[in-house]
Amino acid sequence: MRYAEITGWGKALPPTVLSNADLEQIVETSDEWITTRSGIKERRISHVAASDLAELAARRAVAAAGIEMGQIDLIVNATCTPESIIPASASYVQAKLGAKNAGAMDLNANCSGFVYSYVTADALVRSGAVDTVLLIGVERLSWVLDYTDRTTCILFGDGAGAVVLQPTDQEAGVLSSVLGVDGTLADLLCVNGDGTVRPGSTLTAPRIRMEGSDVFRLAVTAMADASETVVGQAGWGIDDIDLLIPHQANQRIIGATSRRLKLDHSQVFLNIHAYGNTSAATIPIALTEAIEAERVPSRANLVFAAFGGGLTWAAAAVRFGARVTPIAEVDDQLPETDQSVWDLLAANFESFGRLDIQ
Ligand code: UT7
Image (cartoon, rainbow, N blue to C red; front, side, top):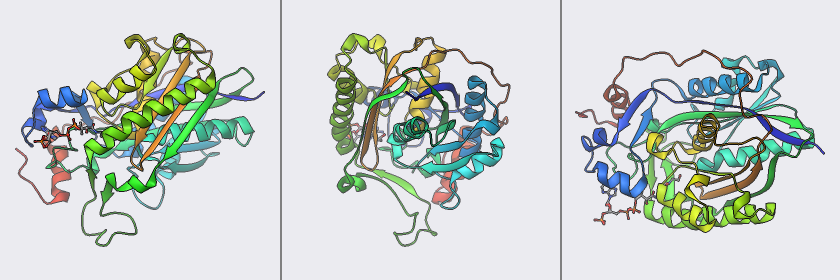
């Protein structure tokens, strides 16, 4: 049998931090409210393009897999914050990497984008359609946030994670999966003012709008149901699960999924306090950090679970590969910046027509 194994992993987080204390200066909120309602303490704001974040995460993942750029057959770039409508951001990433033999496409399933992409890429490798896939989850959400809206600007941040998938004859990869959507609820979480439908799209900067408590309620059910289904289909008991790597949107939503699966704290990976919700990037960033923290044993049983705009949800029971140490590492870093978090947000505010940040 042919399977698809994760052989490389990497992440890229911009260095500039936006803390809860910073947010207290620009909207009516408090560190205490944000921490207790979401689990978030700080998030990162990028000074570079999303494709730069994607490139660095990808270079680290490719090094960890010990492959050359020329070996990549397909780049799947999971994102809901593309740099433009045309071309897909995957084209920029392919050019920056010099992955000359690769096809490249974006996949947008919002915060579920990484799991949707992973299940898709796994199937393409298994089928023999391609051998080596570079799968990236990347977002620059700070660019579509309204930093006058306290119900959304506290939640999201920027970042990228990436994995490399390669064929193996040992059982690995997706053992079972659920991909779901209820498109009738799509307007509960959306970015107005861009795209081809809504008028005025070239005149106003696009901004996220969200009915947070409605999304919260649906997320609690959808993520827990999907996780329970894939674990059941994989034939796993509670003790068979090494680690749940959930989408990091809200610690309370993760708690609900963990309780449904009856997992111990030690079986759940959390880093939401450090980065907030980076949408399609949360799971590959979390996976990379979990491997680095030695919380992913060889041939580990993992559960990926996500939900998000669309409204989408997705989960997969995943058998990790044999190797949990990188073959190589790269020295590459993001370019340094002397811009403060206020400088970076000023660019955002300017595009939104409000300049009085401090
Ligand atoms: O990846 C998918 C993306 N979406 C999500 O992850 C969103 C899921 N939703 C959530 O995580 C939660 O709904 C939130 C964290 C956004 C909000 O938590 P909540 O417990 O659902 O609060 P709420 O929206 O019901 O608001 C409770 C109160 C309201 O005041 P009143 O009406 O009770 O007086 C809000 O106006 O909290 C107020 N509020 C805030 N207060 C301080 C809303 N945002 C803030 C804030 N600081 N930032």
